[in-house]
Every structure is written in C-alpha cells, then in structure tokens.
Amino acid sequence: MQLIDNWKEAWKMSSVQVGGAVVALGVAEQLMPQLQAVLPPAAYAVLGVVVMIARVILQPKLPGTTKQSG
Image 1 (tube, rainbow, N blue to C red):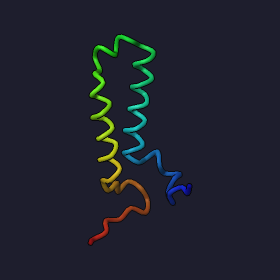
Image 2 (cartoon, helix red, strand yellow; image 1 turned 60 degrees about the vertical axis):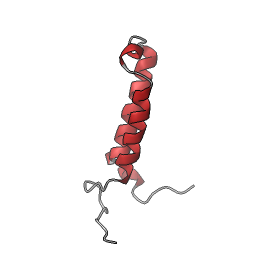
Image 3 (cartoon, one colour; image 1 turned 135 degrees about the vertical axis):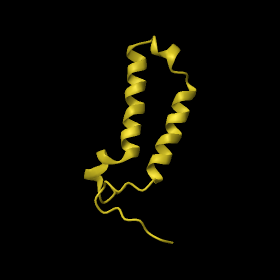
Image 4 (spheres, rainbow, N blue to C red; image 1 turned 90 degrees about the horizontal axis):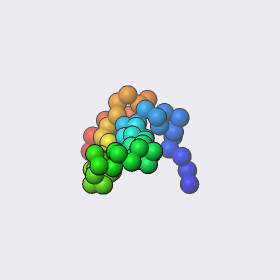
C-alpha cells in the first residue's frame, strides 16, 4: 500500500470531508437512537454515492491539482 503524494492535505479533500460526515452521522445514530427514525438506511447509500462523486471532482483548493486536458 502506498499513500497518495498529497496525503497530508487529505483533510481538505471533499471526499474525505463527506466521508467524515457519514462516519459522524453513523456514530450519532448509535448514540441517539431517535435519529434512526429521521435518517433512513437509504440515506447512507446516497451519502456513499456523494463520497464517490466528490472523489472524482477536481478540487482546486488542493496544491498540485491542475486540470488536465485529454
């Protein structure tokens, strides 16, 4: 396993931020069972798709990210 070149900047990546939100929701749901009625299981599937989309979108706030043609 090898880390990406800009792993120290990972916290700035949208996919990492969305993934962190998914984890936080999962923990909150376990600590507060009343959230289970508000947040259906399908919400986690939707959030998973959002993580995948966020991963492939160009994120110019990261150093070394440039738009490549081709």
